Length: 575
Image 1 (cartoon, rainbow, N blue to C red):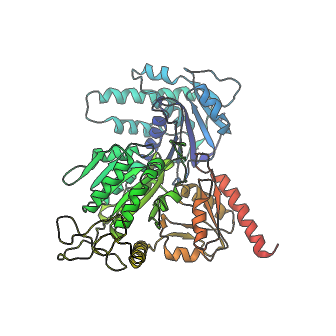
Image 2 (cartoon, rainbow, N blue to C red):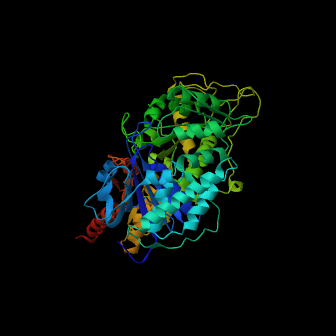
Image 3 (cartoon, rainbow, N blue to C red):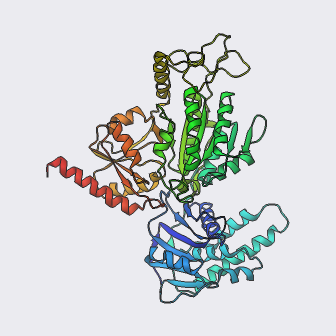
């Protein structure tokens, strides 16, 4: 099957059993592509067992920056029969299905071509080169030069070790074999347009890696955590990299131990963080309440997954917002930052640590499975422009009243002047327990009043004059923005707003949103949680919800936003 013309992007889905190289193949293709100037984004989803079970990963390679995994699959790489049966319908009509001829035979589908992944890999002397066979075949389909792939292999395996030359040779041979076999198939998708290397340095990162790097750049000193999907890789990263004098990383025995340990670290003056998922976050509610009432800086990262309970531990969702903003009993409203891209993971981690130090209390940083495991090329952050904030520390004499007044006050550090009790009971100026109504009023207003210190001025806006606007949050930003760009091209009268600062919202943004006829909120949960929170603040907000464990498809958002916009316009016109 020959398709003429040039392509600006293509989407490949790799599907099979966990451990077959499904994820490795997708990430290898993405890395090879970005090294020569393409943009790439991967999406991974797999079962919760350690090895095995149906797994698939999608890679989108494009000339332009990539915002979503892509709606339509151009190529399906099926490692087994189940993978074909499950995913064949997702492949567009003139797409291609490459199946592992060592595993099964495919009849009756004209889009299919059998490639003996394992057999060809073995012929190179490297049994682990099957993914390179596949990448070589894919490169042929889009007319990607062999030199791009050989350069990638040479860079990847030039590690200064004995045997590197042989590994490079066998992998290049595997690429060539994949290309040669695919050339005999008669299939071609057309030529992918030549890449243009960005004029700035890049990094290829996963979301959890980006977040971890951001935390280190933000001055993180103390990290403890308990393994839980999909947050575990943050713990592993910190154990390997948060090292040196006055740095500490450790795996504890429970999420309750995590929150109580960073409470102690924050009280002692350290920038402290932990990361968990929904079930672990639930266990931290009481500890977060203590951090709120005792005014102790700390950061908790919630890498959202499907819930409730164990739920869908390796799928993506945005259903923890209510739990994150209101995690403790009593009058509590946590500061919440929700990142929407791999790049924002870096800067969101810095900002979360800054917020905790600035207002002296706990901050929740929200991300999600689709970001945690997503690999994407981003602009390399300029660390010289990162200026981490530090808390206001008391440096006076004894007799200091830590909680006096209705505003933030300097925080004493243990071993220095300014003794006080960091009390979980309602307290007076020096932290002693009191039940006086006047004290509870003062302290409640003090705690909520400090949130004003976190009000930001920057947020995204486009065509802000429109009466109907789209405002996604978190990981739905990418599909939402891609949908908005298409709507804008089609002349649909809709505007765009976005911020990663969910509580408190930037005051200027809040003022603008209150004037809109409708704020459309795409979010991956059943209840429309962020839309509900916006309505509580006087905004006419309505959610587009999805709760499949997968990200939005752009076409679905385009259709629903168009319908909602037209409905509002008719109402405004009195039709």
